[in-house]
Image 1 (cartoon, rainbow, N blue to C red):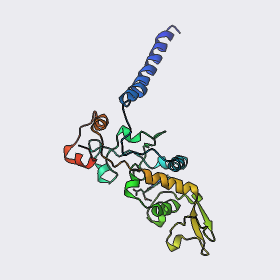
Image 2 (image 1 turned 90 degrees about the vertical axis):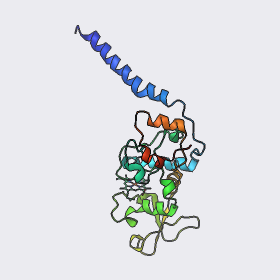
Image 3 (image 1 turned 120 degrees about the horizontal axis):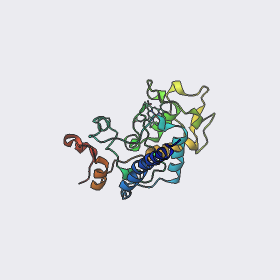
Image 4 (image 1 turned 180 degrees about the vertical axis):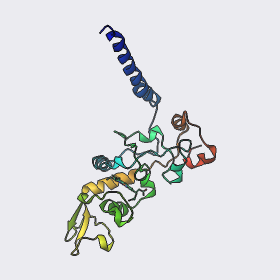
Length: 217
Ligand code: HEC
């Protein structure tokens, strides 16, 4: 037991170092981020949709962080948009960066897929759009009715995915909010230079592909 003191000092030292590297330094690096002019705060409906995104585990298969060409050549080639910068997440609490990419990155899905009908069909049954899709369907976000009410949003489905007996599938508020959120995901505006430096510090930029990154100025 005569080694207790060095052990204690070592443990506290490691904890302090980890706090410095993982909490204090990153917070200091990001302290100056301002929201970009073109980035709108989420509306109430979009925030409710964001909660659905969290609750339904979309993050387990979808990232929200297209990377720079200095980090990987593939993201911009896949059409996921320019690499994100810290300020792009100004209104995101908690952030939904994600680490898994079983499906495509979604940070700019609202810019490339703008149809509410498409998203509703896809959420109700991804196989109605791509027969090879491995994305789960979310039928519990929809109701099946004999007749749609006047303000119901009817989901457009190919004949083989229609419920039997001429009934219709309509979206619940949860599905509509989730789609509101997906359509709001668009960070394709140009990046401020300081944000770019913050993002690329430590990475070599590849000038030949840098033009894909939508850099301002
Ligand atoms: C098990 C993994 C998995 C989960 C969970 C998942 N997805 Fe997907 N997602 C995929 C795959 C794979 C694709 C590509 C095939 C397709 O479009 O169906 C995809 C595609 C998409 C697309 C089209 C993107 C594009 O660029 O084509 C959207 C939008 C989407 N998912 C939204 C969601 C939402 C919202 C949730 C949560 C409610 C979710 N996904 C949950 C795997 C998943």
